[in-house]
Length: 213
Image 1 (cartoon, rainbow, N blue to C red):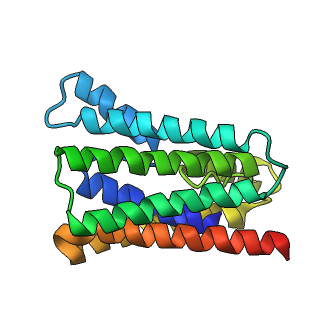
Image 2 (image 1 turned 45 degrees about the vertical axis):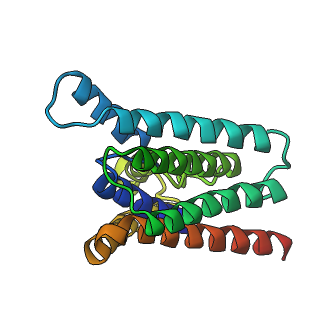
């Protein structure tokens, strides 16, 4: 789960910096961007964030449907859903290496929508597992829990290490995504998605093996 949080950082950095300021996992960011764009703020995208929202909702709905009757905990369907996320991200990565997406083009919008769908699948599977404060796609609730349950707030501070690690991993993932774009140039989007996809597949495989152990 924490590994998938790291890949989310990569994916969102790649989306924002390489796909015309679009978040493919953090939907709060897209809603804010759309709100500012609709109010007339200059040079803010509308179509990309809208497609990302639609793709994410579709992915979450598909994930919810697939996992609805699955056993509690990590099941075969959980492994399959996380693996599907990895396959989609890696496949898009290969496609983007062959034909680098450009901002505002049809191919760029397809990449945005499908990548957001993959992140919706991941979020639905993470929600089903219900690991406290590890949604894999956002850290606002994690930060809230970290502060509200801390000893400073009169709480026990339980789970602080997991929460801090989740925040740190999405931060480091975003930094890695930005570095991949800086180093790889036009191929950065493809490299970032391919790396995220491979890591997601590895996390799905390790989770499945751990469940069977």
